[in-house]
Image (cartoon, rainbow, N blue to C red; front, top):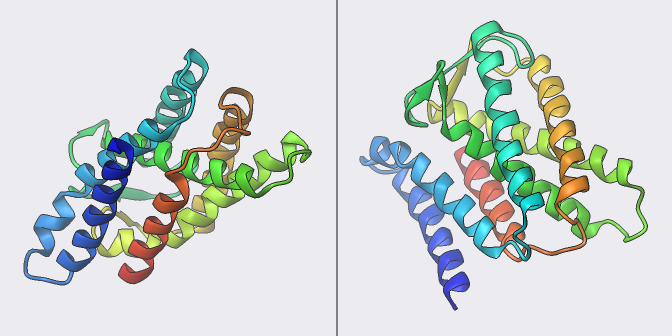
Length: 207
C-alpha cells in the first residue's frame, strides 16, 4: 500500500510540475526540480525487489561515476563539450549540482531495468549493456531541449554538440556494465515503467 501511495504521489508531483511550468509560478516549480528528483529516486529504491551490498554498491557507484564525469565535463570541456549549470538543480560542488548525480542514478536505473525487462532471457550480457547505454543516451537526447528551456544547464554553442552524446554513451556504458554485474537484471522493479513514462511525458511537453 505504501509503495503504491508513493508512486501515485510521484505522478502527482510530475503532473503538478507540468501544470505549474505554464503559470506565473513557473520559477518556483523549476526550483522544485531537486525535490522531484529525490522523490523519484526514493520510489525507485523503495520498489527495488532486492537490497544487498551489491545493489547498494551499484547505486552509489552510478551516482559517483555520473557526478564526477560531470565535474570533469563542466570544468574541462572533456566528455560532453562546453557547458555550464544554472541554479535550478540546487547546490553545487566544483560547479556541478549534487542533484546531477541523482539524475544519473535515476536515468541509468530506469533505462537498464526496462531494457532487461523487454530482452529475451538468453540475451548475451554485452548486448544488454550496449542497449542500456544507447537507451540512456537516447533519453538524454529527449531531455536536452526541455532542460535547456528550464535553465538546468546551457551550452556554449547554444545546443548539445555530438560530443555530449558520445560522452553520455561512454559513461552510460560503464554504469550499464556494472548494472549487469551487480543488479540481478532478471528481477523487476515495478516503478520503472511509470517513471520512464513520466520522464518522457514531462520533457516531451516541455520540448
